[in-house]
Length: 97
Length: 309
Image (cartoon, rainbow over all chains, first blue to last red; front, side):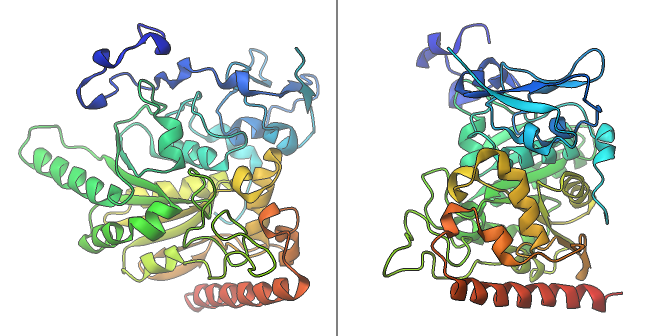
């Protein structure tokens, strides 16, 4: 979007409230909801992709060396990845501050 | 698919047609189911979606999580709208106004939109035999407005409009079996799926989209908020529902039943019920009663699928 969401006024909306941009919800950063964050032990990761498959927020991304890690911009901290990881290389750490 | 294999996750479509930044609760297995469904369907898809959790979380006005043409409907008419889209596009292709190609027409709704409010429109669309897929995301109550009972809420579940207490057991009616209602319309494809079995879900959605004529897919989606479970257990409870045969996974192709997944060892119902806050008031006697019903329903599906072999 050209403008931040909170700056848009009702006069600027399209007729019939049509949204012409695709997938622009990515501008809304759900990461601020989080109270726990997943931390991946990269050396133990077997690169199976189960965490990627089961993430409801599609926030798991592949790092350059092939292991998976969470994109903290969108991660809501549900803990599904840590629970489903077959080798248990993901731990949930409480966010501080 | 007979076996769930975690190792084929690399073969799954990488692009996300249902993007991050949607406002579902933490650990929402329904949003996960939508993500899997959109992976299976791809970009050549038109989606009509009823009011419900998935509608409000994915489209707060200036934003949208969808990367495909998507239209919001009232609770009752997503099946009617997608019928119109399908007929309209077919006519435009016939007249040569748009290039002819295979487009998936998909209507989606929650269990309230499907089993309660949109039932008539859905029945009409299935009966007319449009080339469409209807996907019901069943989280077993109206979770969006704050956990009110729907006709898809199972017996004994405590919700805000069927609270358990001294007088009431909670929901006192049985769950409406939408998949069987769809089967009764004699449509070419009906399936039940669960987002805890993603490859099975994707396979079924793909098959439903490829089937000419109407198809119906019923997806059990665990709701940590409404089921009163920890967010990280969303996938686990989906698996327990299938393993304890509360929600058997099967498909009905041209009236022939086929069981997609037979639990290696059928778990007792208590495994599924314990830990869920909405069922915690149930006594052993009541659980026994529910178990008998689950066994009866599962044996029926088992018998029907074995008769076909």
